[in-house]
Amino acid sequence: MRLYHDWDSVCSFKVRMCLAEKSIPWEGKRVDLIRFEHLQPGYLELNPNGVVPTIEHEGRVVVESSIINEYLDEVFPVPRLTPDDPGERAAMRIWVKYQDDVLYHAQRPATFQLMVKRMLARLTRDEIEEMVAAHPQPQRARHFLDWATGPVDPTVIDEAKGKLAGILARLERRLAAAPWLAGMSYSLAECAYAPFIDRLRRLAFEALWDDKPHVAAWMDRVMARPAIARAISPVEFEMPGPKTPA
Ligand SMILES: N[C@@H](CCC(=O)N[C@@H](CS)C(=O)NCC(=O)O)C(=O)O
Image 1 (spheres, rainbow, N blue to C red):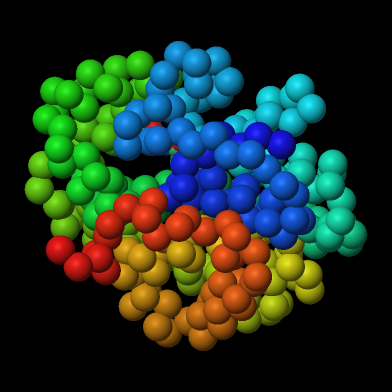
Image 2 (cartoon, rainbow, N blue to C red):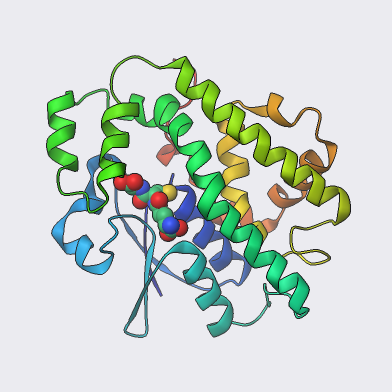
């Protein structure tokens, strides 16, 4: 099992979380996003979307973190992270899709403003433009230019916080009704959300769930999983953020 990933990447952490839950041994190939290694021709051949993660397993290349995790759950079924009950299985997939389609995009501008910008401070705007010219997703290339250059823009951060507050309200309603996103069982849905719990905490956004006791308790339960320690980025690879002393 070879995993192409970066340490402080939420989507890579999501796959590392699944690997850790299942105790699957893996060999890591770091793709340093801050050095734009994900846009090198060799990597684009593996993952034409120009993003991490990607796995290689028994001659198969699999991309997309949610699809990778379903693949891992099929090929390494112990412990099973997909509920047996069809209703719970559907709920799991709906929450994973919501993470992919909504949560990921809601946090991205804040991550760029408060973390990625600091990491790229050594580069000029022109240098960044040159680096992202090969991006197969032009709107993502724009994110590097719009959100990771110039001074921190509080409007972008406030907008992100507004979207995240709506997402957390939806999670609160779900978690008031069931202990886990799928229902009664811990599943691939929690593997998908764990990295975002870590990210939102490191962005110092705790005020967004101060009034959401079910979300807060669920976050603590997820972050107490033994797999977290094996999946989370080592401190030395973490991007500095609002909680990092200047
Ligand atoms: N839907 C993809 C998204 C992957 C993704 O956005 N990865 C981020 C890191 S978390 C990335 O590679 N970003 C680089 C970029 O946007 O240029 C997945 O879940 O695998």
